[in-house]
Amino acid sequence: MLMHVVNVNKDVLKANNEIAQSNRKLLIRNRVFTMNIMGAIGSGKTTLIEEAINALGDRYRIAVIAGDVVAEMDASRFEKLGVKTVAANTGRECHLDAKLVERSLADLDLKNIDILFIENVGNLICPVDYKLGERVRVVIVSVSEGDDTVLKHPMIFKSSDLAIVNKVDISEAVDADPAKMKADIKQLKPSIPVLLTSKNDRISIDRWIEYIESYIEE
Image (cartoon, rainbow, N blue to C red):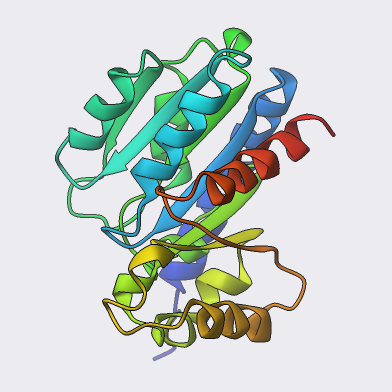
């Protein structure tokens, strides 16, 4: 008896990428610059998005899609800053997918948005294969995760456009070396820009803001 084997994962990713392409076209048509912010729980994704909103909110119209498994805690933090926020709950899934983003986009007035931040679910593995329609993919890793974290999760760094090593001000306390983490990222993808950041270092936060603006002003 002949058996027909179907690669379910391949079919799922193909379907996801088709929706992601549709999302991308919709966002481009409406001139919305979109960033997919990825990183583990506690890496500082929410804080860095908040810093960007505070710095850019008086010049650009900003919205956020806040991905989470169940809770809406991060979404409420963005709403307090006065930006339109859609909570995209994934249920048991450990990542956002293009379909969830498609649904979230339907709740946004794209003609009145300049920047859209998509905060992905806290995970360094699951989001890798799932494009969402974003212009830029950002991965954030905190020194508190350990300075061997980068080489343990190579694919997310290889698939990103920007890498951020965050919370560098506490590196000595957690016995981590930010310079090693940056070197490991560059080993995986030599062309990727790497920022070292801390919410307590205004200069490093300004570099993050400047990176975002460099894309908007292209």
